[in-house]
Image (cartoon, rainbow, N blue to C red):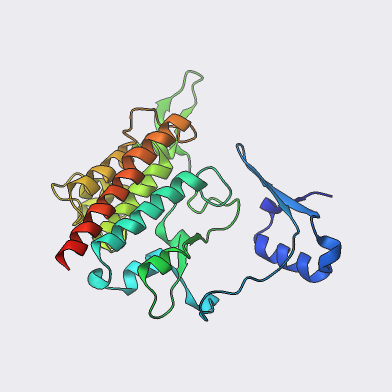
Length: 273
């Protein structure tokens, strides 16, 4: 019997229970279940549980788990270098491309849905290696309610129902979410801490105000341009991120641009030292 893992709140618990219930020789290569979306199908099989020892003695624990939202709130801006901030931005862009339209990532997401294992005396590169999504499987963390506009009628005489995207003029939710995350990384503070009275409680208004300012972040005009392009989904290939042409454009104009910025800053830092 095939188990639909997307109906569970914790895939890890199912896999753990399965391992504890069955002796290893009997469960090797046995089909456990699947996760399926509109475009992807992930099949899980039991396998050998050989533990590969870590190169160091560091042991990760759940008490070391820290959301990215928590990271930027619990550390000061100069705790990490510009290169570190750009590396985090690059990881967020890759994560968006890799996990959009899968059960792991909703179309609207925030930094609190990604986490790292933060232990003492770790280099930032090592922290990024533990980056993972922490949102529930097959759950929309930020529900997108339909907005009913009174007095605006459809051809059938009914009130017109507008989507969240229509109401706010958002062309692509995942990329708009990425633009907000990049603003937070660029300022090293949550978007909620950058609100003004004119924004109300609307993160979209705050993000647009910041992005349209002459200096959106401290990471330079190229980084600010990346934010604006993601916010507007301005890559020349439509607004559907499932389209491979748009994915390629985002990879070229966001990921590769960030990689080039990282490379240049790293060389500059090496030459100064």
